[in-house]
Length: 236
Image (tube, rainbow, N blue to C red; front, side):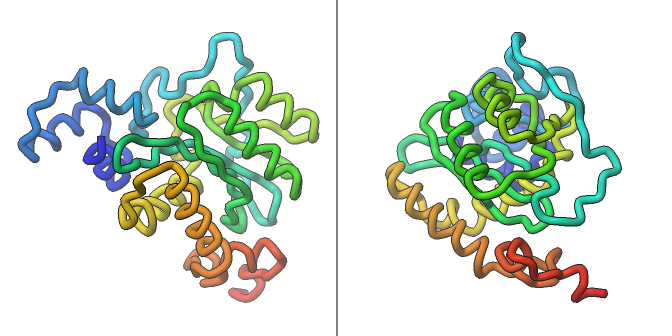
């Protein structure tokens, strides 16, 4: 699972077939069924278009994708979120984060030992306690199509946007966040416990928001841009 996580982070377009080939090159005797099972346990999917890439609950409403040809030019225009796997020394947990699409600011995050919807809704409520976006974009996973999650967005008057099946690159802003989190924090620390993971991630997200320069933001930090530093104006 550790090797699958690392290789998937390097090459998120790899599906189970390519991961089987890669693992066999590392001299691991695995078959595709085992790799598929471990990918499901990690919550991983490849980004190549294919049927049923997001597992929505059959009773949940799927909303249309609202970001086609939309330019995100101000804070709180579009927020996005996603879930990723965070490994521990003896096990793993799941991390959800909500991010502003313009400034890249991580507005909230939560850890959970299960993939149930409650921790995602908790992160959403935490973020909405600060500001409210015009559009909230996510995938069609059952955590984000759940009644509790959707009703929370509706109560705040937020337009709901969902990535189409096989369109995982629609959420590229937060996919880049996962890569940074894992290579700059998780893979370096080797967390023993959930508490260690929570403490380490708390420090990392503070660094990410307030100290880490972003080339795409003119080397400003997400917090500086979110608080009104106009990198677009500075570039002009």
